[in-house]
Image 1 (cartoon, rainbow, N blue to C red):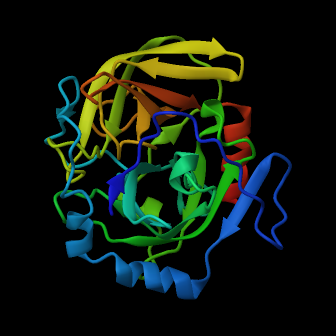
Image 2: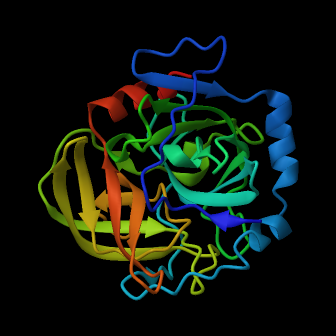
Image 3: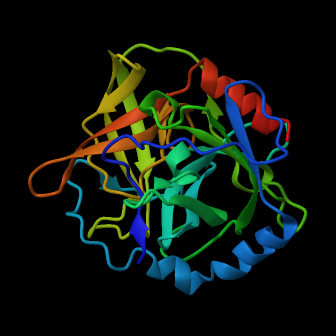
Length: 289
């Protein structure tokens, strides 16, 4: 059964590092074989991409509005299969990197956690479709070759990942789709443009929505987070929170981590993972892969 991903309670898992990997302290690296990359590209046909959100049941957004223009630079839909589980998706954004193949998303989009029976859920068939719109992949489809997450990524402040994709027909993601700048460190509370492919009855994950809202910096016992009144449904996880957005580009300072629901199961607010020192470490490592 397919479903859109948006965590409504912090993931309570921490997967073990991949055998043979040698991650830097506080990070975890997973790699994808060339054979599995080929399988992922064959798996995600246009028909399968359209079908994954077809049965959406979450109420439509009111604050978030459809984005009528071509997707901002580097923003796209991030597909994967949960095993056990089914086909799903998040949102992701290409950022500048040494390999020109790195995108930022939420950690729970590549490490979904455990089932109710404590079975580890694995994310497979990971692909990125920059500029995805209503079944179309105008800039191509890219298969993941590695991803890096912080340890303790189950905590909202660390719910971010950097995913490295293989070139497609000799072309890198950044060269094809462009990138959004990314900033590591704190910034003041202020305006934000938040993008995502929510799996609501309004969008079915098929096109981008945007919230233009005020983002508020908050702190609790596990660290700082960002909060906003954006009401995007599941599938918006990993979507960029941009400052200084000019209609095509801005600077990523957070990614969507989880949402809050009202009694009608409508998303009322989103929480974002900040791009702090740990995120910078993850980024540096991914950029060098």
